[in-house]
Length: 339
Image (cartoon, rainbow, N blue to C red; front, side):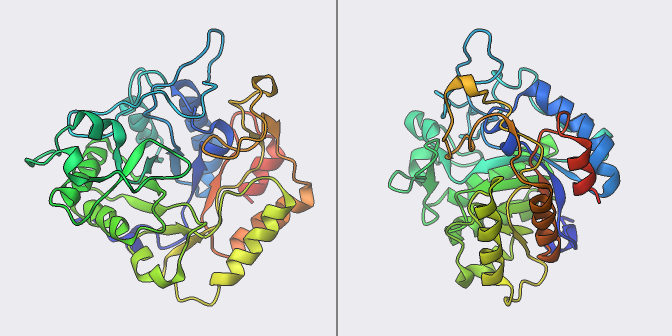
């Protein structure tokens, strides 16, 4: 029997997420190298979840001599015949199966990022919804779009076939061996949160659910959020003093609420080597949306700020998800997050 979210995460989840160091450009090589480093350095300290963020399905264009794309959005996405996203051979030529198997060999739980909704590409070519007579255009709401990522349309949960679509997505994830899914652009969409939670309950595998982002978090929706293990309460957080201050403000806003095992997520830990995919000579400095903030660098926190940052999260019982590149970040950083 599939366990409840409360049973799966009796304590705040600890892990790593690729966004702060690789944006939407994580590929097979860097994923495997960071996975090995995660197992060696973080897993013994209780870190368990290893998550690839947005873009794993993107058919990016990569310029000769580059390893990573310079595109903000992929020119195309890979989908199957049933309207579901698949790993792109551009970044993952061998798919995700080998990486997931290696994670499980290392006693690490593997996760992916998922944008809310149904791919616009699926709607355009009107692919089928698995196990039904419905098609993508039958359940999509083209008026419901994300302002910062244009891969998906929202799902109209009033339409027959809508729940079946989400059920099929999580059946697919379960067949891959996925253990955690970070669903983005969903914190303000209670009906789709419920649909995702129902799909997880039906998929036959224990999968923890993370809700993002936190800018539109609504305390009136706590009963819905409790269908998940963790929910973002902040916008994206980076290596700036004002982001530490903003996190204190958001923590204060929810500290008196009865969360009953639902963990308030203050976003990733931007320590160590950040934005590795984006060297300064790519000319991408200042890009905040989708691909991250700034260019390749060591984080710009002082040692005291790093300590304030990590103590804040410990006191708030926030999930801890390291964002820095694990093969390049200093021992001082890794020692702090495993203290």
